[in-house]
Image 1 (cartoon, rainbow, N blue to C red):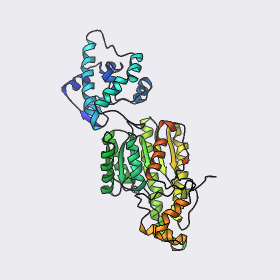
Image 2 (tube, rainbow, N blue to C red; image 1 turned 90 degrees about the vertical axis):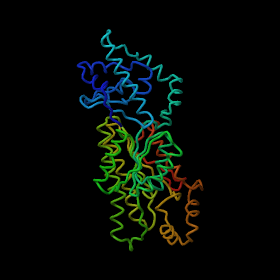
Image 3 (cartoon, rainbow, N blue to C red; image 1 turned 135 degrees about the horizontal axis):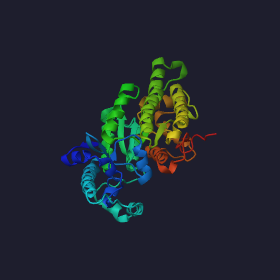
Image 4 (cartoon, one colour; image 1 turned 60 degrees about the vertical axis):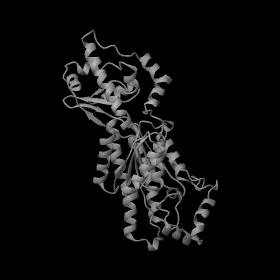
Length: 394
């Protein structure tokens, strides 16, 4: 989001009929297609009414005494500002010659479905490509493993993504990957300790400062201390609870507060594990927290459904690719648990699946994208299990 102030903007805001002039729908195809209609006069409850009228949220806002705010990616903000300022001038002039004559609903529907407008937006480099185009997402643990794969997948689907991670350098590497693969999307690395209430609030404040809203949260940060019960240190148990449960709670609470206030719905995804469905040996903290994440999601789905906010979980099988959990120490612990050599661990787990196919990060990302998309609009409180058939949910 960016703020603009100029003589033209200030002059329009000073008009006693400014609010009335903005009540009319878009005047031109550009204003409808690029700016999502005229600016919204900042008053409570008007955003929902705009969506009902035009089927899309406003891209710009006028605040009396403050100026113009434009929401969007870096590529479109300048264009939207120019279109909006021109519209303000036309509206002011039209008021002196009989009033504003906006596009009719039929004309707006024609423009929305006109292939040429889609082509013009594509040429301008502002097309909201992908089924998550125009949506804003936050992914925790985005610096590696599943968090990175999911962040890349959301960007591939068109979403702008905040990459939250305790390791800022790793999150920035994820951002570089997104920049190469999905240059039309926007992303930002945000250092965040999900166990810190203060840092969680600061992270979401940065998201709102940059993009002006929130549509998706994916809780993917997690740890898995590999100890038999008799050897499990108390501090490792508490650390797992802090990251895997408290972290998910703090992020979801902050996201839900924003989504409820927006009144536009949203999607929250908890990345759990097949170990939350079928316990694994010598994995007490992981078993407990992953089961807890799914149950928290079910409760949140009941609470937030009336606000149009869907909450689901994914419970992946073993994803070895780029994982910090599947480090050398963890693999050696698994080898000891199963009485095999470390190099046999990955083939061992793959053979346990019905499909005999290793689960990759993109497989989980695709599941998350589906749950965040409109194709899953009636799905909430559910758990999707991308595990190649290792755990059959009964």
